[in-house]
Image (cartoon, rainbow, N blue to C red):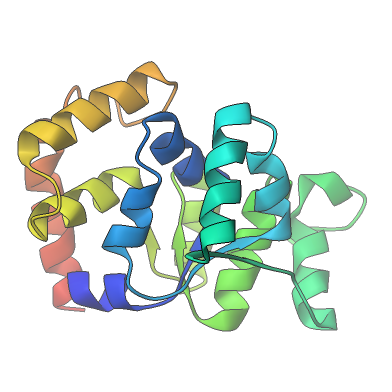
Length: 193
């Protein structure tokens, strides 16, 4: 399952970009994912609101490992307008309203058949209900650890730094170590699906 995710194309939302950038490890996304790493224009604009994240994302785009894609086509745009808070006058037909970058990321991942990388529960739940594979920051740390890119102590340090920088992780996880058994179960479950 890990190779399937890491070798496929992924759409990355701003929460995950920010978590890794603010911990000085945005490059880890390029090391973990072998396929195309894509952000939407809306996510690029959101990421440019924080100076450090803007510098890191700009550098990743300039170096070519992070791509910026636009939503295109009537159906893709209609779905985006229906779920984006920015366009609150459009009916969402029972779907939750999401932030601009979140909405664009979910719609792009759905239409292109890519995995979605996000830590926000709203977009994650919506994506999963649409059959989109999702992964968050903790899952990325787990994959990096499983692939030998990071050690468990380094994952613990990054986890703590991300929490100090404002990352939201489930309260039951005080350290990365606390996540490992849940992640092992989650990835084994995915392996059998």
